[in-house]
Image 1 (cartoon, helix red, strand yellow):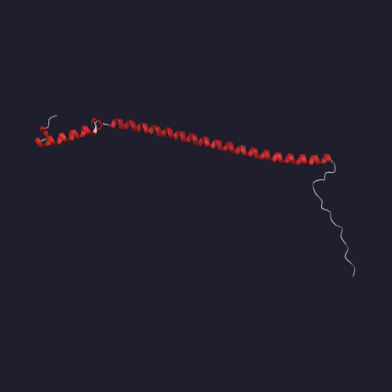
Image 2: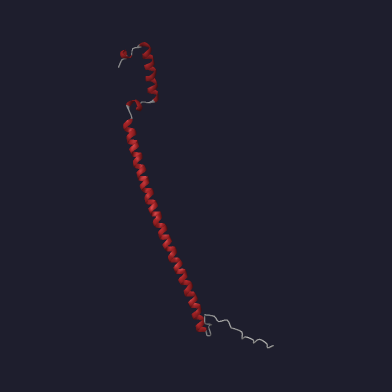
Length: 120
């Protein structure tokens, strides 16, 4: 039988040209650095856009919280005004004074069982 033919060894072919001189070597190095800098620039631009969006959303949140605080303060003020209007002279008396009046009313009721005779 005949022996199979030997194939020639296929050399690996790189798409990147191999630098043959110092100038080409520097160009390849600079090209790689430029690509890296472009990638970093793109990343920084994306990060900056994300930060701007984050700041904008936080500004909106702060504005909403300030509006809520203003509303709450207005409601508190309205409640205080209503409570001030609802107070009667009876409410403004001291506890001691009310107790004295209660004791007096009980004693007066013993001596004057008819409420119509109570002095005014």
